[in-house]
Amino acid sequence: MMGKMISRGLALAMVAGAFTAAAPAALAEGEFSGNVALTTDYVWRGVSQNNENPAIQGGFDYANGLFYAGTWASIVDFGGANMELDLYGGFAGETEGGLSWDVGVIGYVYPDADDLDFIELYGGLGTTLGAVDLGGYIYIDPDNETTYVDFTAGFAATDTLGFDASVGSYLDGGDGFVEEFTNYSLGATLSTEYVDFDLRFWGNDGDSFGDVGDERVVLTVSRSL
Image 1: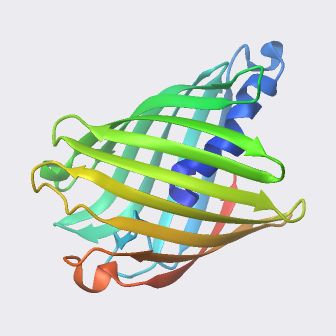
Image 2: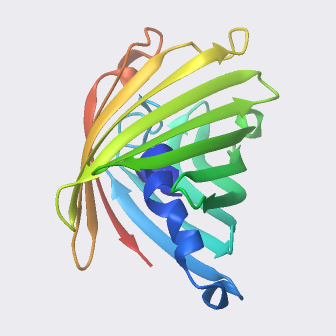
């Protein structure tokens, strides 16, 4: 899932336009893509999801016009879960004025610990100011009544090297379902002919996560299929 490699806000600014830029005939029957990655730690919203250990990840995506859907999976280690499977779908596009938008739903499924399953509705906007891509998302979990927002900024130094920063925060923890905290990241991405590299520093101001919430640097190597 694109949102697992870099923040969805930045991905929106860079990718949503591609859905509308493609010729309609090229998308008439839809387009499939895939990805696979190896990361030194799976960090989500500033917290390790694999007990500070490396993880194998990957997924598949389908796009047809403004519509997209996909699935993404990763090894995890928390709450009795050993695997996370994300199922998502939505609509993304770009206005004539260059404002990109994205709305959809994502389900987080833990096959061996289904009591952890939950769903989020999301919506985002993105734009480009000069050489900087800006994006913002809001995620709402209707069952647990949580609200999370995420903002990103990034720029391409060259055709293959980019830098970005993100900050995200739980505005509503759902009456104690999750701690209300803020996380942040600083990252650099390098694309090569064969693989892509993402080096990222993560941190957060939460005080109830223990070691899995410590500041850390994560290296991810991925390849598009």
